[in-house]
Length: 260
Image (cartoon, rainbow, N blue to C red; front, side, top):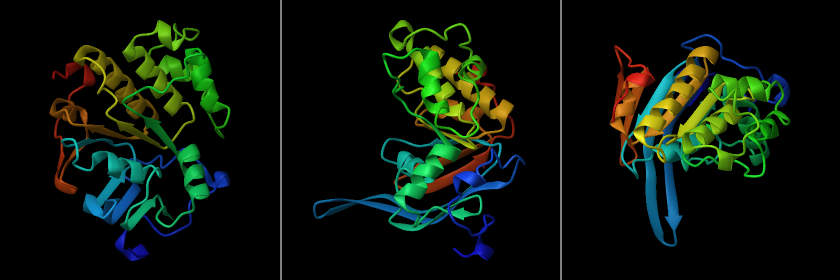
């Protein structure tokens, strides 16, 4: 993909000195993918996970990637986040090409530009909520205070509690606070409610909704749960490694209105 064929222009992976919490203007291209394929090889067997993905994601959006297990959602998210590389095709972040970047460059990209939230919380059991978040802010360039990030997800009164003293939903909100505390431009969430009941899941989704609306962070949320799609600006449906449908929600539901 040359510069003329993408709204994200060419450039190197952003250096730490280039890091800014942007793009700040809603509608600017953040990620552009063209012709993405991913094939996993298991001995002599090839397993295609992505089969030619073309996609653009823009600043300020809350996007849901919807599809069943094995549809390619997590593979796509991991490539966008620099955790994996495509077999073919190209990915751009702003005006920087990620495909072909070194592992050192991708590590810097993840550290400076992307926050991750996974299905399982991955908190350090021996650290309090405040300390779990501080572990990330200590290596970030322009972080929030841990207390500020935890207050944003409704845990301002739980700063000194350990994970074992918290519910699953509270632990997931600590994980969200940890992800946003470094002020990333992008928040990538892989089944963040997958281990939670619906009532607790709504509380977690409200936290993600608040982050998206307050900070303007591009938020991409993977789910197999069609009910969650109603809160998104756009819903991108995948099946068998293909994007089969992209639609915008004319009217979005607030997270508190979701039922599944």
